Each structure stands twice: as structure tokens, then as C-alpha cells.
Image (cartoon, rainbow, N blue to C red; front, side):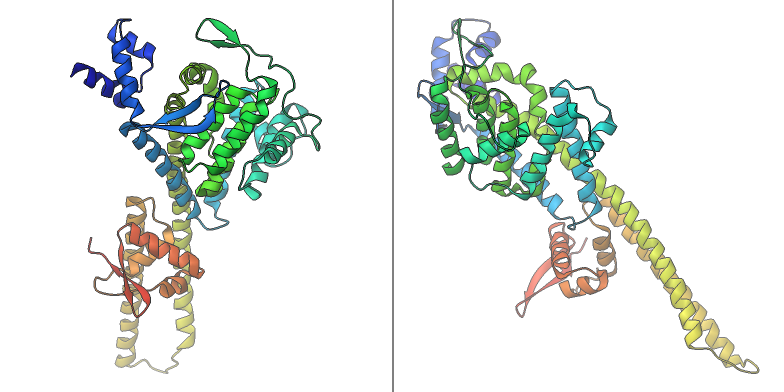
Length: 457
């Protein structure tokens, strides 16, 4: 029973290495325990089409906890994509989010290359005005991100790899491609020997295996991007720029997995700064055991943190822009009210030699009606303000429409939103559907048309 508890503990609670188990139990006599752990993990293991230098297959363990971690980060990526896509095409929020994250990516790269820089240097790169050659590696990478944003590849191939490599090097045509000599760095193997990275003769077949895995496997895109980052470190197909090429391919995988525009500027480049301090030992364990799960857990932790930071940034930007738009709408309403009053006065002038009692009463009623209108506008403004402050996911126009269309039992349409908020049909449809998902309306079908009725709060 104790051994069963340990197998679950060292797989589900923490995905421990053999050395971890020895350290935690404070004994080296763990052979039978480790066999039980391996047997338990084998029930959830999934072999991959990726192989090591000795042609032994790699695998991932889909335990309960690990499966949930994969699902969690998938949901976060999809949420980031959904929230970003909800903004209008040329919305200020999109511009702000992209610039903020482009800046972070460039700063991560600059630190990785050990370049000294000022914030203004990175802004010049983003604005296409850099003239300092020392920043060429950053410029090449940034241009490649923008290129990928416009022209992604549905299949990852050797041609695509060559295109990435050439653009990162800033060359029109490649003089050489895969490295044709042993990699300079020497890699430690935990059996007390030293070994080089993949021999030159094995690079091409190993990379072809990777392409097949990316293009044909139906496994989660999260597992694919982790495998790519590890495999480029393991094989080292190029004499330089291996991590950068891997990151671009990872972003391309996100795009073809329907993560959309955010794929290019969610800063997964954070892995560069974590490699030596955190990932080196993890990758060594993967190489030793062929169990990619260790890399999956470690990399997911870093990526999850970046996506949550990105989601927080979306919320902050939405709040700031909502406040701006609210004040703008506020000013427009006041101006419109004043203009309407002036026009009403001009349209119905009354020229009477002597005002009678009836005329005085009529004018008093008109003043009362105008005061009531102003009070209703003020009340509506307060409702809109309250809605925006209580739910940062709401857009100002959505809040304004709901504030004036929230009578229980009434039915409203997309066409009404389109006309009153002065937006295109698709924006109106998306806005109403989001109000449904946020719990403000219930959608019903009447005579082949969707209508929306307020939900009692």
C-alpha cells in the first residue's frame, strides 16, 4: 500500500526524477519503489514519433495532474486569442498590447545577447528607425515576427526552416544550412562520459522526424511546442541561432493551431532567460530517460506565467481605454443635449405680443420635460459607469446599450445594437453574443431570427 501511495505521489503530486525520490526519502535504496513508479507511469504513457540518437522513442506521461496542466495552458492560450480578437480591427487596445509585448520580446533578446541598450533603442526598432548595426540580430528577429504574422506556413518543412534561418541571419541566400561539423559546445551526459550533440550525418533524418511529428501528430499543440524547443537543443542542427529558430517554429505552430494574432507576440522568448538556470538540468533528464514530461512541466510553468501576465495586461488596457471612451461618450452626450435644446428653441419660436397664462404654463412644462431628460441622461451615465467598473470585460458601447435596453420581458435585436451604437453588423453580433456569455442577456430564436432578452440580475 505504501508503495502505491508513493507511485501516485511521485507522479501526480510531483513528477519526480529518480534522484528526487532518493533525496525526498533520504535513501539510495529505491530500486523497487522506482520500478513501481515506472510501471504506474507506463499506464499513462504515449509514445511519440520522435527518436533519440539511438533510435529509441520519446514519450509523454498523460497522468491526471499532467493532463490538467496541459488543458489549463491550452485554455489560457485560447482565452488570450479570444479576448484579443474581440477588439475591433484597428482598436487602440490592439496597438498598445502589441507594442508592449514587442518591447518585452526585444528586451528579452537583448539580454540574451548581452547587448547594452536603452528603452529608446528598442522603440526605434519597433518604429523601423534603427540605424545601429549592433542591434541587427534584434531587427532581424523582429522583422521575422512581423513576416510570420502576415505569412505563416501550414506545414513545417526544410524549406520553411531555411527561410527562417536566412531571415535571422539577414541573408538573401544561405551559403550553408545544417552544420557540417561537430557542434562546438560539449555536452555532459550523466553516466560520467562526454558526448557531442547529434552527429552531422544524423541531423537531417532527425529533423525530418521532427517535421513529421509537427505536421502529422494529433497530439496537443502544447506538447508539440515543448518538443520543438527541446529537440532543437538536443540536435543542434545549426552552428548558431538554434533557440531562435525553435521559437519561431513554436509561434508558427500556435498560429496553425488557431491561436491567431497573439501567437507572434506572446513573449515565449522568456525561455531564453530560463535556459541556463532552469532548463539545462531538465533537458539533461529528458535526454537520459527519453521522458519529455519533465520538459513539458518545466516549460509549461514559464509559459503559463507569461500568458497570465498577458491576460492581466489585456484587462488593464481595457479598463484604461474604457475610461477614455466613457469620458468621450460623456462629452458627446452633453454636446448633443445642448445642441438639441438649441435646435428645439430655433424650430418652435413663438412671437406673441403679450404672453398669456396658457403660454407661460406651456413653457414651464417644456422646462420640466427638459429637466427630466437631463436627469435620465445622468442616471443612464451612472448605470454605464457602474457596469464598466463592476465588469472590466464589458466595452463602453456594450454597457451603454445594456443600460438603456434592460427591461425584463422585452426583446432586442442585433440590428438595434448596430443602428444605435453605429457599428457594423459583425461587431454588433459579436457584442450581443458577448453580452450573452457574460450573463446580461439570454438568446432566443423567434421566426428564424435571434432575439435577446435581459436576464434578471
